[in-house]
Length: 228
Picture 1 (cartoon, rainbow, N blue to C red):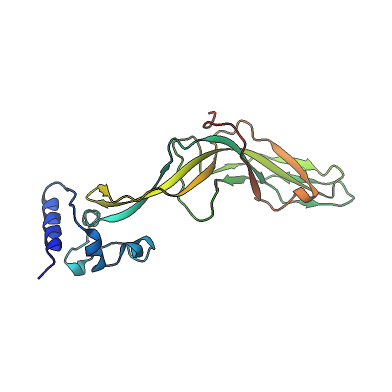
Picture 2: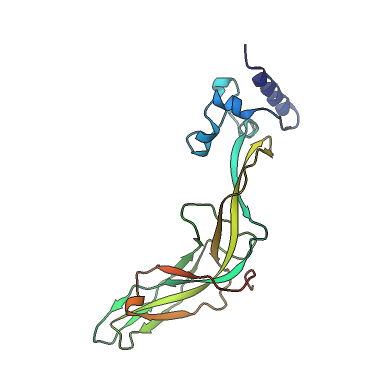
């Protein structure tokens, strides 16, 4: 005898396909335990859906997959994001080593600065409604003489906006969300501003020269979003 909740679910899906999709209040976890996988397996990425055609619910179309339900994680601002204007300083050339001689380090190719996050791991990026980008590329040129030093390199100070985000995971069925988790993975994203009004090049020497694309953040800037 089929599980009564399953029969109710199947009838609801057939009715939703014939008319307008309507959320159905069912215990998806109970069905999940006897279907493709558990919630933990879904969050670990080992299964994609809770229900399968083996349980009599075919998932042949996008609409049917949407009606069958899935967990989706969304990234959002925490409050207004608490935006601040900071700087990301990045080495944009290799270091030139010329002890006892005159030489220079020259930036002649395009360079890219990307966003940074204040915690380890791989997380999704959002602009939070600010005029920022995941990365910004420029093709400007700049040269720094060694000025009597043994080693010279070029760095650039980019304007970035810092804002706080978090993730929320919800169960979506027929377009409606439920069983949303609390905020997780709260973090600060530092994204390069679309406009760079004040992004000076810096000449650095000797021990201050590291590897190209090495960077650090200066986080004592004023509150507020990008100035343009």
